[in-house]
Length: 151
Image (tube, rainbow, N blue to C red; front, side, top):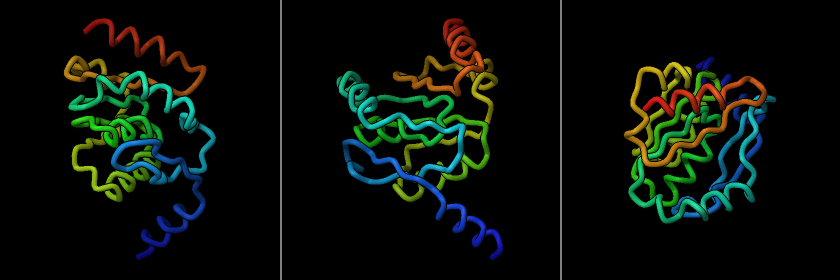
């Protein structure tokens, strides 16, 4: 019971971001009040997903450093077959699990692991679309791209 109270009080202090299009269009996702999260703005996602629209139906997506999961969730909303979300921040992953359950997205897999470690031991070539949006100024883009190039 104490855990439920903690969870509900945490949820009450969150911001929101909306899903732009697809079957969950207009639905709001909760965003943790966390300085390290910077969800992709609506306009950026709208442009990105307009470019990706021919590739999304039936796609298998990987959302590395998923944070809020908005990129993978937007892809699922627009017809992607499946999405795998990877992040190593447990509170963020807990909230993402809550979002996925709330949306009844059965084609989502959420992994609470370090993205670079996962890339070193798994085959990202099984994915058609890879979203890569790591935290700023940590060299993670370069390291991630190095790992993706080796496949």
